Image (cartoon, rainbow, N blue to C red; front, side, top):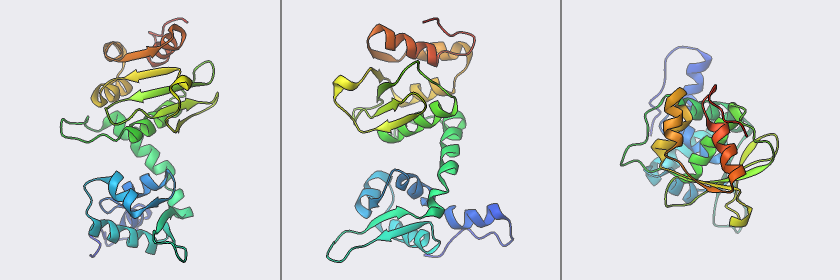
Length: 223
């Protein structure tokens, strides 16, 4: 399958898009940023891509030096991991996540929302906006019935952590994806409206801190 994106002139941005601008290419990089994946893992988490097209994109990215194949003698499965050039795309993916939360259309009724990706976007936004609780804390983010990934603040930064023992969760946040994204992108009185549509389960201190941290500037509650 031939590449469709060739721009016919030299520009560093154009050249970059010729390498990773094909449909699905950056999303493959996005998923591999979470760690090495098998073909079957990528096929499952990407959703909507055909095995044939996934094979083509993986070969293209490998040929361009974006990903590496990890093969071992006697092992049936091939693992894919990011090469240094692929890892260097991390800030690009993070910028796209931020832009998507702040400007792209909200999820529609037929859109599948992967809960882990929702958590990853939330982590990126919270770190970008320097949302810092007073002490380390773990939140469980339930945006669908398919799981509730946990995000953890270690005192400096947020990260996604494996779904852990419920006793280790300080606060469970339940809402639907459109409301959650609307909350993250909202300002002023609109943010207060969306906050009221979020269900929180946790003790009073963690609930109040969440409300303070997510309130609009100028409307933050005292602890």
